[in-house]
Structures are given as structure tokens and as C-alpha cells.
Image (cartoon, rainbow, N blue to C red):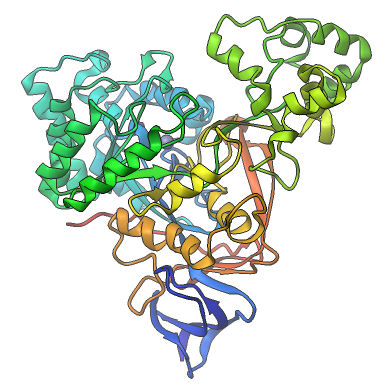
Length: 566
Ligand SMILES: [Zn+2]
């Protein structure tokens, strides 16, 4: 008698090998048989006509705050994620000096658009050091496994205090930062993270460490080499080009560890990603471990009356008369022909050139719809529709925003959509050196909702894509399980093999359905966040225990803190 038998499913094991029909048995939270299982289970799940896959391993989230108050960690857990990595992009909440909590919250709010009020109310600070943070996490129950990286910003704030943003640091300070990083990695941090992009700002300006010198990055990165585990994660405007590349290579050579960085097809350098991949591939052939991290759909914003940005948000009439009204009232007023005429006669009032360009980038604004379409055809953009109908794009966008009683979102892809199809993305995703990531689960609450990416990988890439080649199920599953787990060194999970942790998804692939994003107000202090619901996960299982069945949480909380070990 086994603890659990998942019977008669289509097993897609996360290694990339071809699917096969079979059973899977679990005892004590581990997989003990894959193939034919004669013995019954105390619990049996009938998986006939269903896909049985490993639980998704999402390596790029920002649940560092939410993890301390929300055992469910939605929306990622709704989407089959069973292991998630936090502490990305240099921001997080440990170590923290008493009195510095607000500063770290402001950084997180600025960079990741998580409401500061929610973080204030939600987090009960029961730690100062990173090891204490880990102990606090280990002492809480939750639905999924979590792993934490030590963030550069927090290390800098802890050691440098008021001078956290300073470029220059003394040898003593650098030594102290390195010691704290070492301490964190020894306590099981799964990596170290930093931000080198001008896009990541708080009210204090660029986040601490944005321009840190290679010596500093190497000194802190050494902790990973000494411990023999952990990944260096980075978001950088240079995306793996010089002058970053030199110290990245140096880091890999010195430590033997992996460095992963966010890679995107940028509208400014639309072919640079391909050169980067070629360079990385050549270096990896020499034995380095440089891993560009790519998403499975464009990085884009959701414009709408409920989100924090749209084409009219700085128009004087909108800003002064409408912005503060409840949604229903706003929709009613916007439908008033007089208000409509007045608003459409105005211009954006912002002096911010980037914001202005984004809000009127009509060739890259599309209705997202329900079900959402993240690969919309060029002829459906605001500019094309306006042209066809002899209207101004402003009018088209205005009317779109009022659809679904003002709950429509417009999709404004920023990166990975230059040709307005997924050709470049597909090449990036399937490149042997890359890893899937950048879902940013738990973050960007007012403008982006990409925690659903693992589901989208199946609905769009495997099943529905009509505008180009799809990705075979076996490959897609491997990208989100075996491959992500391998890059982050999770040796005990990511594939359905005997001895591995029994983290599973049982999926009705035909019924898998991604809903349109919606704004909910369920964070602490009634903070808002975008979430996205899903149907079609028959069961999600963590360490042999079902956590979700038919889309409902079972109440079980088998999730653990994962500590990295060398
Ligand atoms: Zn991030």
C-alpha cells in the first residue's frame, strides 16, 4: 500500500523524454515508482486522459514580503508552481537593521510595485540577520516550497546605512558586506541578486548597488564559490554585454558558479539578444555557466482603468475630475459624450518623455481580451484599427478601456515583441543556454500579472498557438521543471524519477484555461494586486500531499523552506 498512487496518466517527466502512459507511486513525500504500479494507494488519483508532470519550479519571483503573511502564495500556487525562488533583482527584506525596515519597503515598492502600505501592515519583522529571516520562514506553514536569495540592496543598506547608494566603499565595508553575504549563503540562501538597470528606482533614486564596481560584485559573489552552491542573479541594462561581461566571466571562472541575467529583445537593439546568446553559448562551451533568463511571453504592461497606467492617466480632465472616482462611476462619466469629447481634445500633461511615448505607442497597444491574447496580430493594434475605421487611435483606446465595464486591460508589450510575433521569443526560450523565468510572481501589482506564465506555456505554446510554431509538450514541461531546477541546483526535484520529491501537477490539458487578469484588493491594508485565475489543474501535489484539487485549496500546507547546500 502506497501513500498515493496517481493512476493511468500521461506522464511527462520533465527530462524532455517522450510522454508515456503510466502510474506513479509516492511514499513519504518521494516518488517510489514510475511506470506500472500494482499496489494500491491509500489515496488514488485517477489520471486517465490527464497529463502528469512535475510541479513547476519558478525561479524568478518577488514574494519576499507576502511569504511572511500568506501561506497560499497566490497567484503562483494557483498555477501549479510548487517551488519558487524569491529575493530576485537585488531587493528583499534581510538582513535588516532595526529602523531600516521602511527603507527596504520603499525599495521594494519602487522597483517591484508592491504596495508599501501592504508590506508595512503585512510584515512582522522577527529577524535582523539573513539566517534569522531564514529561520522565520522555516517556522511558517505554506502551500509551496520557497527558496530565498540574499539581495544586494539589503546588504548595502545594512553595512552602509545612509550611504547605501554610495559608489565608493572602504575595504572594511566591502569586507563586512562579503561576510554578511557569506553568512546568508551558509544559512542556505539559494543565490545572491543585484540590479543594474536604470528602470529600477525608488523615491531615493536608482537602487543601491546599481553601479557597483566589479570588485564589489566579485567580492560578494565569492561567497557562492566558497559555499559551493548558489546562483548569482542580476537584471542589467547591458543584458550580458560589455562592460558587464568581463566581470561575469571572471565571476564564473573564480567561483565555478552560475550567473543568470534577464535577457529580452529590446526595441532599441532588436538583434542584440541573438549576439548575446551566441557569445554565451561559446563561453559555456568553455565550461562557464552563464544563463540568460527569458520569459515565455512579452514583458508588457496592462493598461486599464484599474491599473496604474494608461493613455489618459495624465490628461487634465481624467486626472483632476475622474481618477479618484470608484470604477463604476468613472466608467459612467467616461461614457458621457461631453466628457469623452473634452478628454479626447486634450494631451497628456506629463513632462516624462518615456511615459509619454509609452502611453501613445499605438502600434504596440492591443486589447488583451478574455481569454487573454498575449500574441495579438499586428492588424489588431490601436494604430491599425484606427486607420481602418478612419478614427484617431486615442478614440479606439478610449473605447477599448470601457469594455467589460471598465475591467478590460490593454496589452502594451515593451520587450520581446518587436516584430509583433513570438519568433524571437521562441528562439530565446529554446536556446540551450537559457532558463525560463521573469514571471515576477508577487510583484508589479498595479501593472503586470505574469505569475501565470507556467500555465501560459501550456495553453499557448503547447496547445493554442496559431501564428507560428508551437513547442512540444515534453520540451515545454522540461523548460519549467527539469531545466529551472537544474539551473538553481534543486537536485531533488524537477523530474518524475524514483527518489525525487513528489511535487506534481495533474492537468487536464484540453480544459486548461487562463482567465483574464483582474484587480483584487486582498493584500494587507486592502492593497490591490492583479491576479489571474485558471481552470484545468486537476490536482497540484507538494511532497505527496494534494494542495489544490479542481482549483480549490485543500488546506494542506506541506511547503518548506528550501536551504541550498553545497
Ligand atoms: Zn525581478
